[in-house]
Image 1 (cartoon, one colour):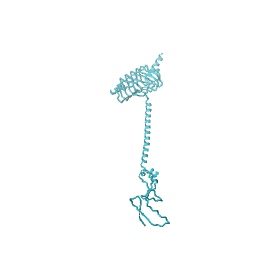
Image 2 (cartoon, helix red, strand yellow; image 1 turned 180 degrees about the horizontal axis):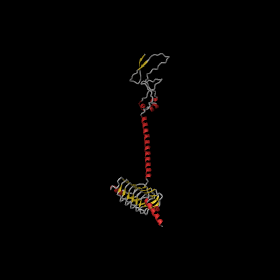
Image 3 (spheres, one colour; image 1 turned 45 degrees about the horizontal axis):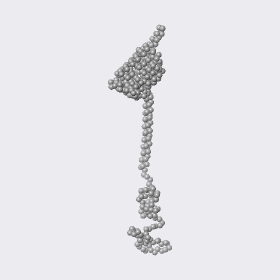
Image 4 (tube, helix red, strand yellow; image 1 turned 120 degrees about the vertical axis):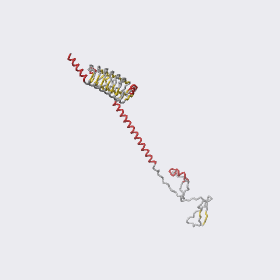
Length: 318
């Protein structure tokens, strides 16, 4: 019995003086006799259900729990001081974190990617020497005793979370290296958010490329139309008629071809009398030319100038 008690005391002493990995509640119970853990405490990804760490007041290393998808609650009611960082991330079933006595963290507090964690509060937390990053689906975040955060502060919760109380801490110069609080977070992990951002950037670049291609095609078409408009239309050869020659036009009208090709010219043309082998003179006093067998008896010269009558008259006879 004495040996058993001695071995247990030695085991408890070893647990207090080194880093500890907790996979179940029985592993956490080995720390019940420790008020200080000289190393770090890590909750394994295989841990599930509720993990309660009693009596431990100080952790000289880090306190970490990542990827334990079946872990529902973390309870450390006596924990007051953590020398390393507190990192609790991607705990998909986690609903409760209870660290009511925590007052100082000498490094960072990073709590992200815990989709079912709706309420987060550190009622006695006064000082964080590193960054404070709280991103998730929080409906409320309570830090009523917070006095100083030396690193960057980023807080993001659900659409129902209010930042008014945290904003008042900013006005009291609690956040020394920058502060950001926003609501409406989907609780996505940083990797998922990075993937969404990369996809959005790719989509925007694709849209810009399509717009550039359409504008380029339109510019080329407009340029082609402008080039065609500067080419003079081909002229259709026209027959030049001497001023003393009369064009043969049937029944005193313009031919359909000329009317189609030269609509403006067709409007100004006057009907012309046909000319050919038979010469028509506007006169009733006309002598027929003798044939070759009949000697010429006389010749008549017709008046070439304008006359007052409707007939041309001979003026000299030979």
